[in-house]
Amino acid sequence: MRTRITILNASILTALTATALATTGCIGELFGGMAESARRQGSTKVERVSDDLEGKSFAVVVAVDRSTAATSPMLAETLGARMTQLLAENAMASGFAPTDQVTAYLGNTPSWRAWPRGRLPQELGVDRVVLVDIIDYRLYEPGNAYLWDGLAWGSVEVYDPEAFDPDRPIYESEVRVRFPDGTGVGPTEMRENLVATELLRRFVNRASWLFYDHEEPNIIEY
Image 1 (spheres, one colour):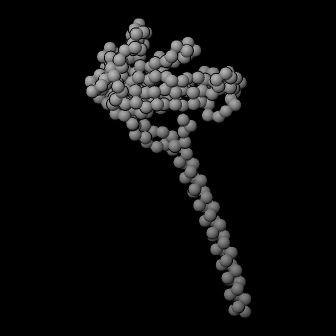
Image 2 (cartoon, one colour):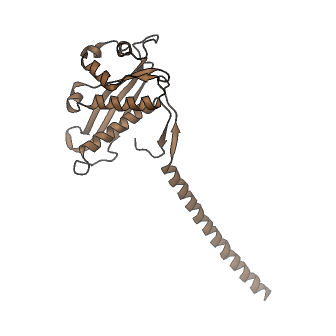
């Protein structure tokens, strides 16, 4: 009788242990899933790469080639305005040149493209010039206007008129972003103004984030 009871108790204990282990596994998976979800929905603080605007006045100058200017005539001014706003709000600069004044001055002085770069801050009356030179900008695949394949690619350079060599940048980087994130998306699925707006937003963010600490989503497409 004792042997039967012992065997029975052992069976019950084994079953309970298996149930507990299974339950523990479920709980582990549950908490693991919750942790992953929190990570995906969270953000991370990213420190600035350059502090060259802190305590200085600045102007954002955007250079685009004639072909890009012809197809996207407001690109330079819109990009300059949005980037100026973000930097003025976050980069701890002492002041800035308004985009409309920069655009008007450069528009009336087309020879500025041939100037030594160190002349730009002097002409615009600022301590630093952030020069954004657009290398490539497009909304659709080359030769295929039926599929969106947005690309914004440019260099970001900072010039200081008091540097040892004012015609060389004291900081430089490249920014390259794309939109949409997937392929095979055309005008029937997504309107052109949405593609252009999101592509510009991504580029402005990446170019501006170089100069101030910011929060980036843990899961970010660009």
